Length: 597
Image (cartoon, rainbow, N blue to C red; front, side, top):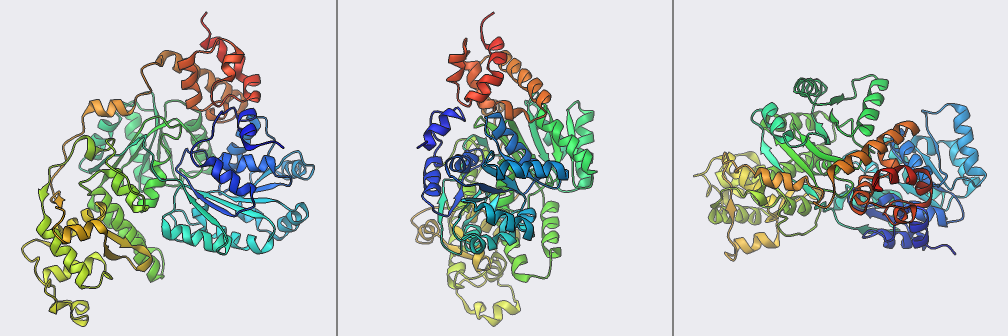
């Protein structure tokens, strides 16, 4: 019997699994339903592609975007694996040909959009094929608590009942505890294993700054990034066009992308970004899901994202090859006001609006954190870590003041009000505000009522946000955003630990340019000129085959080629990511560059 390790080596060209991959593959092969949460770039696709090649009957992969399906199939075919894909962008003849690949047994993987899968005709046809495995990619789309909810994904909750003998595997890089529980309830009816293999992306350098002059700040961020690809996210279509035009005037290869463009224009612009080595995609969040360009070296937000989940998902598009990448988030109070407005206009579901406001609160807390950004980011996803040394607060620590007394006031107010209220009510209690809510609950009779009058409301709001970011307070999203005291918070309340605070208006020192350059390096043993020639050849081959550049080889493979400099096909075969099919197709061409002349 062929093993997963053999397929990994003999087809995909890798000698060992990445962390978490083998465990998930074994669970799927054992017949378990699995929800896998893995960071972007950790190799989620292999976790279901390898079982699909081992299982006797077909695997159906549910994917949200046509472009993502096309790229996945192109990547498999480049490795010598036949796969099929059916979507509305194909004419009927092509769709029939793809279907026949599956019914004949030539293709063991079939990629479908959820709306196509859940039609009566397709379900009836699949019943005759008796699939062994359904895979739901970007699984957070099924949850209204996720960052990219898509109503058509909810239909997938019927799969468990329609195909009781098939196993289901769901994958996402973006799901907090509440979202994970919602996905499992809908997809698996409670019968599943949830595997969380960490949210940390240590290769991403995290940075946040108050927005003052976006154009100057953007140019300063891009100053050492010539020759690299990246994404600049904007909130509106109009601002996207403005930023793209500004960068073009400054000599950058800037490409605008937003939902207001003609579909052909968007497709052309996306293809340019995927195939060109030096391109800046200036985009709204309409661009992103399913973008599998491994060599994105930076992501810059010129406006505040919608939530921590959305922010994590968007910065996760950088550095998917595992090499260093840099992120920057510029935010201002205008952004915050707009985000609040968007939430209020989303609909009449009061619970949903309340939840989204709390999620936005968590993102603001992250932005105002005086501690390591990575501690705050991972803490939101219930993951603990130490200072990372690769964020702006670690590289250039802000000036802090001792606010232990004020933190104890805040924590006491949270405790005495029952750890059941949001920041607004707790701050009202501290300020001695005479509101109906305070009076009705008798909170005007608490010892903490009015003890914080010496500080303005903005001060307390910022202190709450920084305490959330620092892990002294938790926001319970599933319970209407009530503030809860954590173990670290209890230590401060008891006087066992101090609390240091960056006061509102205080600016952190600018991180050193040396640190930024170090974050963008690829190692001193790689000749940049040789690597550039390898990338140029890859781009030519990709354009000839009309596939994204990474389908030929990912950046990590090219970097290893530049480091090892293979002189024969046997040596080339030892490079990670060079499987037999790619060795046959591309090996000789790349040897002309790596072999000494």
